[in-house]
Image (cartoon, rainbow over all chains, first blue to last red; front, side, top):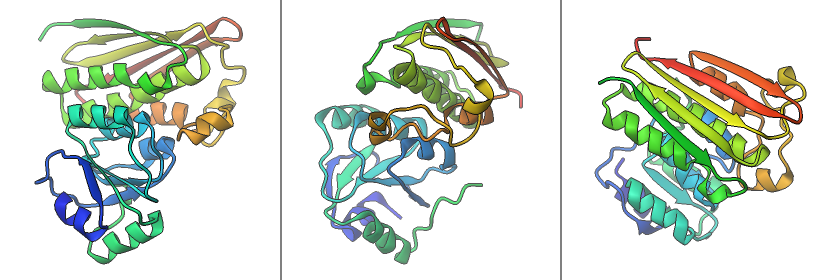
Length: 115
Length: 141
């Protein structure tokens, strides 16, 4: 699934564009970056309600190409600065985490279930 | 490629910058052409250790020694030390404050995840003196 298609499905505003042609195969939803570091095994997108620079740094470490911020929260200027430099797409949606997960799952984007 | 020696200082109490060094080393390894799995395992272990340094130890020093066969990274701090290393190695055990948890860390996965991501990990710690963690990632594996 393309990032532009994901943005359309969850009615998201894109704040920062990375490589839009990246093919997204799975997703991981979490507010704990510790768990993202421990459990993400594939190049998933990240669905999160957390807004601080460590969200983007975590994405960078885990080769996560796209972060969707839920519940209408806005990314901070520093988040967008780092994301732009690292080529990570950042978008937000007014939808809640469960809704975003449900919509993307229904359209064929599975969970990152590890190995 | 010969041997590469890198040294960095991690600033204390600057949570917004925690992870900068890990990012620099990750990009260096990628540019040097190390296999993606090696780059990723190193990045995860480094970032966990760097976050720990900022959260628990007022920053510290990171040195990286990189050869085609092995990546060795040493994290040295002068923080409070770890009173019970066996407890600290248990998944889910953490002394992080509520503020740290609000920022998305302190799930008690740090040290276990460093161990899982590396081929060698050594923790030397003395309460009141500091902690030195040495990790190695073997490139041939």
